[in-house]
Amino acid sequence: MSASASSFKLVSTLGGIAIFSGILLALTYEITEPLIAQNESEALEAAVFEVLPGAVERENYLLDDQGLRKVDAGSLESPNLYAGLNEEGERVGFALPGEARGYADVVRVLYGYDPVRKQIVGLQVLSSNETPGLGDRIEKDVAFRENFTALDASLVHPIETVKHGEKTEPWQIDGISGATVSSKAIGKALSESTEAWIPPLTTALEERP
Amino acid sequence: MSVKGNEPLTMETFTQGLWKDNPVFVMLLGLCPTLAVTNSAINALAMGLATTFVLICSGFLVSLLRKVIPKQVRIASYIIIIATFVTMADYGIKAISLDLYKALGAFIQLIVVNCIILGRAEAYASKQKPLKAMINGAGMGLGFTIALLSLGVVREILGSGTLFGMHLMPERFQTWSVFVLPPGGFFVLAGWLMLFSWWRERKAQKEVI
Amino acid sequence: MDPQSPTFIFLNAFLINNFVLAMFLGLCPFLGVSGKIKTAGNMGVAVTFVMLVSSICAFGLNILLTRYQLEFLRLISYIAVIASAVQLVEMAVKRFSPSLFRALGIFLPLITTNCAILGLALFQTAREYTFVQSLAFALGAGAGFTLALLLMAGLREKLDLADVPSIAKGAAMSLMIAGLLSLAFMGFAGLGG
Image (cartoon, rainbow over all chains, first blue to last red; front, side):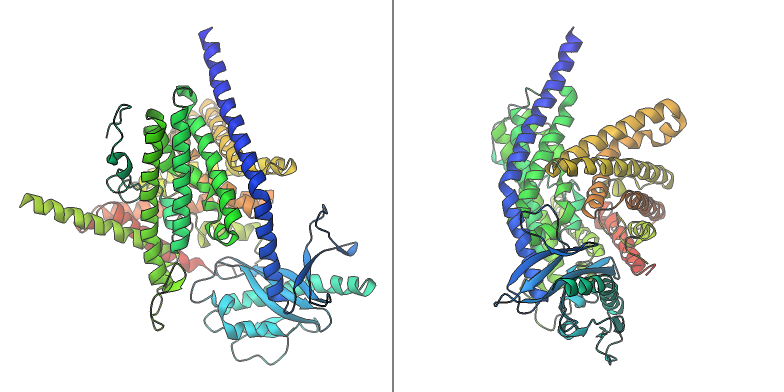
């Protein structure tokens, strides 16, 4: 008798605490959710504007087997690429993701692609764990960043990273000496991503510009 | 130190965690976050404050429910309570700053398994009145924050030449990147521990003379 | 090598971003249990085992939580489910293989609240690993933990005979060694690339 009463007490106490914590968490979630969504959208917007010079507005798109279509804010589909619009409302280009293995961990980038000029017009490293002072120069080095103001992405030749000072072709990235692996990772991320994304994107744009 | 329920509220309640029983330097608890997120001062501060928040809130609730919770399920109840407040802190930080959230990563959620908090709940809050439990938690949290900051400040100044993101060292200062890398965490903590034990030894010698 | 291939994920968790020496997960047992090589080995096996169990649990739970949009309950449910799963496995091992239980048993309850275990579950969720990737991650992390523990224990057994300055005795010395090991492990970066 007393044993069953005591296990009832155990279960009810645990249950009570669990319900209380559930309510508290649901409340926290409700309060912070809009703030978090806003933060995330602002961060994404900032990244898109960074890689697409001149962009002031963002549009979400989904590209899959059925072609390219716009994703509105309330839609259930999640976008996989973003377009940037300039002040006149013209599309300046698309922001596409890429990733490759760096020295210490995976390097993730977002880059801007201009479908008219067929060029990469900007690049931002979203996340990397490269060695401070060496590999992390792919994020800050000014000369290296210059590579991505007009990098040929017409896919005549895949994008590649060459040794520092040996860049001769428009599709080559001038590497950083002392950060060879990391700068090569950027080249690999870009060449793989452009080869995967740009052909279907070009086809989709020809069908429905 | 034996803790009884009827001790009066004294300064000791608060200062215990600051120095005499400092969770990191004296008791060597909670080392995962101590080393993992202290590569910059701001990360260290955020982590310390989040832990303090969890310590105060869980201390209060555990103490409030100390007569209701049956002995057999107390650890499970404490863990649920702690996990609730950790999730709240997690969402809170995400809502305040996404950059900070990314820098701390999963380590905010790992506050749950920080032995300091469960240790305090079991050894102190479950035997004391709510107000005392909160004050003691605040002291412990502050002690933890100070420890994190003393690592974060050293590592940021030596490793990046900055403090809270502001340039501190002269332009020609060659940064010691190793200090913001994982090994630096071990070295700096070892350095602090040696400093303290040197200080204690010197004090003990003086007393002998 | 493809960054998402199970082989690379294994190598990454095992050597390149070793759980203990690069991510600082599971430091308490690392500094506490690594006194003797034999104990360290048993502990390592037990941790790897619990990691596999919790990785599978976390993977299943995450599917459920995402389907019902209850992500805010993730942390609580991970802890509760992992702890109970380990308890169940412990009972099963005790029943069917007493000798295995004697080797691992004492460690199991300790491990459940180890941050390496929860960290594994959280990281695998954050990186959106598939089931196979999660298993590779758990195996790599466990192997990495065991390796770090064994190295540390070996060094410590030698260190007992060394003449250490009195202020550096104990924790400070262990941390210095861990730092040097961590420095050595940084050499694994770039491996398999």
